[in-house]
Image 1 (cartoon, rainbow, N blue to C red):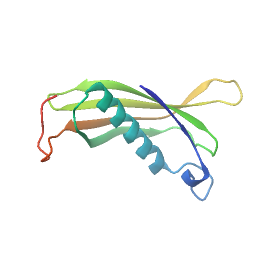
Image 2 (spheres, one colour; image 1 turned 135 degrees about the vertical axis):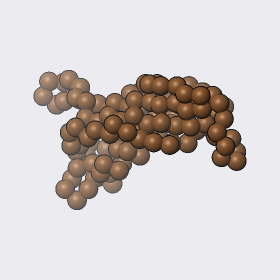
Image 3 (cartoon, rainbow, N blue to C red; image 1 turned 90 degrees about the vertical axis):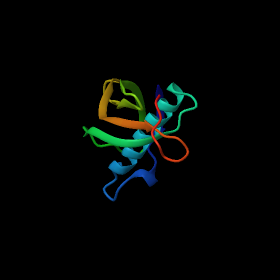
Image 4 (cartoon, rainbow, N blue to C red; image 1 turned 90 degrees about the horizontal axis):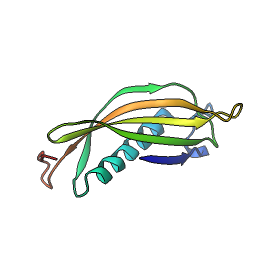
Length: 116
């Protein structure tokens, strides 16, 4: 699944760069959407984020491309790898600027694990 996000002034820190927490929030959101679309009718919650790598700083006006791919399927959980890219101004090439693996577990309305 692919999604896009425009980096706006309210996403920046005092130095003019993207707050890392915003990237983590968007990554969690887009991975959750991918899981929900991949498993319709399932209720997922985030249980972990690992292999988090911030590779390059991001400035205002950058359009980010998020790519979510299913990495691992368990009995009640699913893991997604998220890669985030931006276009390079110089060569019109995409640069990988962030990656992470996010794990979700399927829960019922009482918070109990359910099989996928």
